[in-house]
Length: 327
Ligand SMILES: Nc1ncnc2c1ncn2[C@@H]1O[C@H](COP(=O)(O)OP(=O)(O)O)[C@@H](O)[C@H]1O
Ligand code: SF4
Ligand SMILES: [Mg+2]
Image (tube, rainbow, N blue to C red):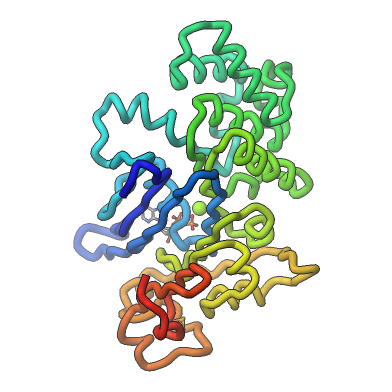
């Protein structure tokens, strides 16, 4: 792994135990996920999948909010599971920042936002000069297209869209290289969603911030992604450039997702149907999609497919592509 890597996730796994100590069960909410963000220009890497497939668990591990069971996470070349407590407190928040689903959770509802943003500039971003801290906060508000007087109010006086913009402003004050945004528009009024996603695009282009955008909604994924990973029961089924995946989905699960939503002018709209994953299903050998797959073969039920790398660079976990090299 090189210093050029913005983010490298290897074999990341989270096993949860459910039920009691004796009769309890274990299951892999995130199962050996590997991917990276690298290169000279910033990217929006989208992780799309049904509710319960493990997206939030993956996001929280990358944000260092929960510990992985196995695996490795490198942010800007540093193994974040081995950081000193000083780096964890100071360096990490300047490298990677979250944006959550419920923007109101980012702020105390009764307190004005502005002093909190100044606190972020001085304590998290480490700007000692008061004038510079104020300047940094104003730049962040401008980047999310809010006037400073909005930040002078309390969150309960504002709309969800405004508060989500404030939480994005808060996240960019430390000038992070990566923002992990977990369903950032799913609680926002539909008419305001594109405005927020456009801010992500603009922050990527103007400030070079990389985004891990997590969503269950293919239409927004289509709109903003450079790369896409389709997640199914804790694993990536298919991963590659958004153009390749939306142009020609390879994995039968990706095909099913794309077919299940209306298609207008090559834009996807609507939502993925939610299927609740049974805990036991995580324990079966073979391909996790075998019970729903129209192309299922004998090998699929016996052995889990590895990721095969296609000529387009797309990686797909499916035995239909076993003529290609393993990734
Ligand atoms: N703390 C936990 N303990 C046990 N199971 C959990 C815990 N958090 C999430 N899960 C389970 O892990 C699976 C993945 O959850 P999650 O990561 O929230 O998925 P998503 O964000 O894709 O909806 C779900 O089956 C969920 O019920
Ligand atoms: S590995 Fe087999 S069961 Fe799984 S998606 Fe591919 S064809 Fe279907
Ligand atoms: Mg989630």
